Image (cartoon, rainbow, N blue to C red; front, side, top):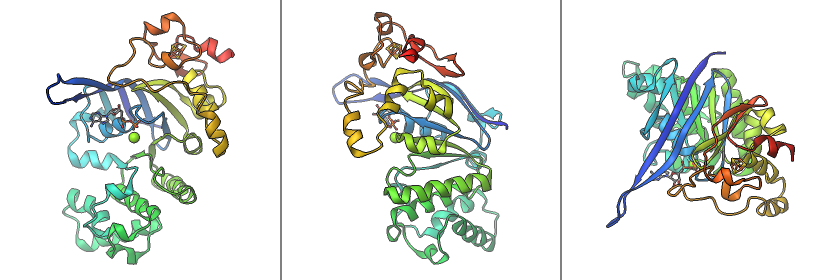
Length: 321
Ligand SMILES: Nc1ncnc2c1ncn2[C@@H]1O[C@H](COP(=O)(O)OP(=O)(O)O)[C@@H](O)[C@H]1O
Ligand code: SF4
Ligand SMILES: [Mg+2]
């Protein structure tokens, strides 16, 4: 198993400009560290607003990082030219309705990566590859002439997946790829992703706020809270023996039925603090049942504990309870 991606000390700060007010800084990512191996799935989980999409955007160069370094296929990420970059890493977006050009037919949407990055390819070659990919993602040939609005949600996501695979990337970043779909369709798309991963030897960075989806798809898991990594390790370590209080509460509150979901809303106390005004110490302190006075003052480092990485001053104490 080789390492495809390594992220070191990644920060992303957005400048928030409002009329007649000084520019404010919003720290969406703080000191993110992780790596991704070939053919594995790293699940990224956390509440809405914790920085998951920002991470996906920085890793696909839709946003620029503020600090830190990224190594892609053993090379500095910043030195890749666009063709090399798009052949290494691609993204599938949450909302297939918004991420596909409504004025383009499916054939053109899927063939664009080829015609843009490999203009030397003959049109017969492009056609053959597009139809072969449509077949692999479960889209019939006659769909090639249709516009995205003629497709169902699941078919549109298949279209987005087909487009993302045309340059045979090694890494696919999937940002909530099934969240916009009906539950019955979600399983079909997840199964397709598992099949494609094996067939094309893909590594997935799989982003979701849904723990059951994360558990189903991931080999390893990175839990984020307000722009920071709070726990990072193998799926089984994290699901069987979570050490960070936030991970524990997320797992306890994972809904199995609608009624349980209602009850779970009481477990995670208080609002997510604003990313514009982060607490000085541990960002989870205002909601944490194990907080001590020191937690307010000092940001916990991510340290290795019981076979995974965790950022909590009291992780051992929390684990015993
Ligand atoms: N383009 C942007 N400009 C300013 N703030 C942003 C921008 N995109 C995201 N944010 C802020 O960054 C934080 C993380 O957002 P996001 O990455 O979308 O989280 P998630 O995907 O986990 O829901 C949020 O506080 C969000 O409001
Ligand atoms: S560092 Fe303190 S406040 Fe933060 S999660 Fe751990 S116990 Fe809770
Ligand atoms: Mg998001």
